[in-house]
Length: 530
Image 1 (cartoon, rainbow, N blue to C red):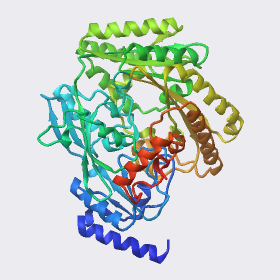
Image 2 (image 1 turned 135 degrees about the horizontal axis):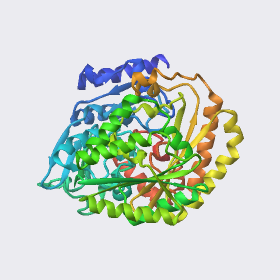
Image 3 (image 1 turned 120 degrees about the vertical axis):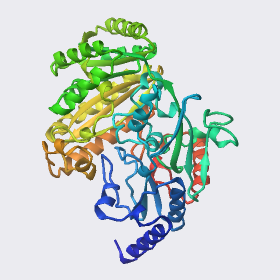
Image 4 (image 1 turned 90 degrees about the vertical axis):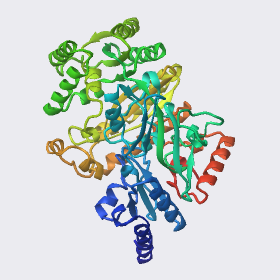
């Protein structure tokens, strides 16, 4: 970094400190490196991290950085693996929304909740549970750390997704800071004298800012619809012989039936990895969650006993498995949904097995993020393609052909792959290949997991050849996704979003970008924007 660049950074830091106070502007080298890398890759080290304590502070910081010609990138929980916020420019600042962590309103009469962008999915779940309420979609695997702002920018999904869709499907309105520091409000909350209870009075302006990777501004607040906490829940798991085809077909049929809140497929590698950790402390927490999470203590004890008896050895070697969660207003309603799922599984030659996996996931939905690094110290990075159910088998076959072609090289460099398939509402199939390999850890890998977990594993050291091959394979898979016209979560700087967009739609997108960010300073390169 040149002397002139250092001096320019110092001037901006001084300006930001004058505006916000020194405690809200972070320049420590280790912190800046941590905030400049995601789960997959490290970018240029940002000049500073700004952590305003309120929305007004974010507006002032964004305006000051924009005037100084700096790139501005928002960051939530930091769980991106698609280069979502790592920067290609040194003259950039990171806006950390973590201090905007207040639940503004829980309106039990009108059934909505308003939260600041740094609130986590776990925080919302914990706040609503005593009131007997819940978000319809209620969080991601990383929900202990992942934030509302990041989830709406990237495409959060999983808990409740098979019935209710993604975070984007339950949001009612948002507040966004534009490049000049002004606040843009969407949904009914943008109108005078109105509550934020509704989304589409006129054009759906909320949708313009969803899944944008922070290209259109910094999200600072959001409102979501609420539902009553289901009174009963049930679980089912099945294995399918003969490869993935039966499990894939069954997942699509389960999705179309609407019977499940969660429905997903693990391949054998995913099952092995999910059962690999020998963390007895976490096992006991999960068991406690199973016991207390049932509609009665007796049922809880029975279900907890089943979990213990099933242990970790229930899965049949080499088989794909489907896991489902049902939830409803009564035990009878849940049992009726489970019966639908059992009949679907039977049609596809599925064999029911102990439901330990979905039961354990729901018993403790927001576990510590030890899994950010593998149980053997390996790194991982996922990709995601969403297609209509009719296209899922062909998409999977095309991706598997790519992976087969690379298998000799992968084996030589100890690169493996696991796969997660997820049902999204009734209409969408999500295929997610996850590459696992050994290379030096990034800052997130050393900082996020619990110390007790890290004590059992070690950084494997540099392996640039493996990481280069992982990047090459990811690029090839993204080309396949594009050939199928697939949608993807966490677009970041990984997927060829812009290049595959219809020309007239490109013009509209560019016009929106020009309005909210005329100099292109919000997260340059995200979405492939030029």
